[in-house]
Length: 414
Image (cartoon, rainbow, N blue to C red; front, side, top):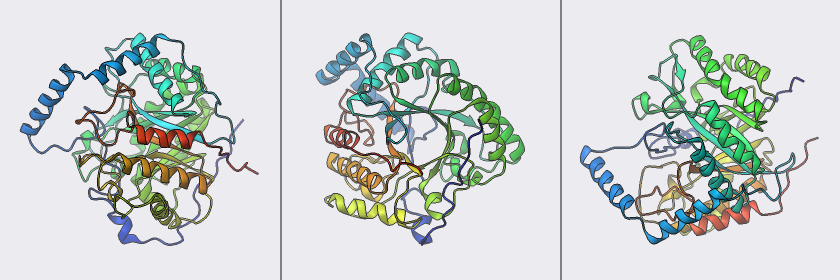
């Protein structure tokens, strides 16, 4: 049966302060992620720094702490045990309480390894009281004008994705598949996925449709709840090719089709995409000091959201939210490169505020960015770890558990 699509976010902004939207972050208006070898570009100053960082990491890897050894042992026990299961599996009318798992595949890893690692991640998410997981994975393009998209060496194959999806679904987690354009070929800042300009849009969309096909087949086979057609492609939003692509996807996949918008475009105007679920990658800067109460962070978020529309937002899910556990992060939550003094309370308070906003505005839920698939979420982050990591930070984990474990139901659709 053909699903009806809703014109999400047909409401235009109540007020838009363009000066704030144009440059809200130190490095731009989109989240700046880092990732080992991929889509999420490093900010590199010199070869000497690269070598020094590699040396520090090698030293750390060769001398695991007692805590790291204990965490690895615990993960091994989880991997050898039956898959943990969600106490209350997601159903329509329930919020999506989830985490983004970012997976860059290593084809040399065995299927058994993928199963064991997925079981560890599933158990950790269940311990957080999550009921949902989104698997983000990279795909690749050439320069910003390229007309080609394709899988790369670190793109999980559809078959290997099946292995991971099976574990997550055996655990009772609501699943989303989410391709994310790798940016490393775009030439660095200010180029990013949101301002690509394919020289031939017909060719670009034909290539992208071909790339998505096998992943939509897997999504249908495993009854994946949502498939995110694209993420943060600001410059291509509203293109009529999306309707053709969505119609083609619908012939293979019967689940919910979504799109995740960057927060600047969400606030600035209508997101004209032919989808059923709209996500927002939300890195709203809030200009308050580190010791600001949670209420001030809530007010800051609502100030941003009110530029679009006031009141409940029942069609919206926060597809990404996160912040570094460090001083000064409220001003630049999308700055994933900088390492300042550790401040776990900053991160915990931010998570608390976001959860409150999601509930107050009657949103569909939130997905925290992120856990890397190969990481051990039971291990305490060391000094070289990204400040963005929340796994292993007790203050942040407690806030997530309290949020996900709260009594919150969505307003039933009419």
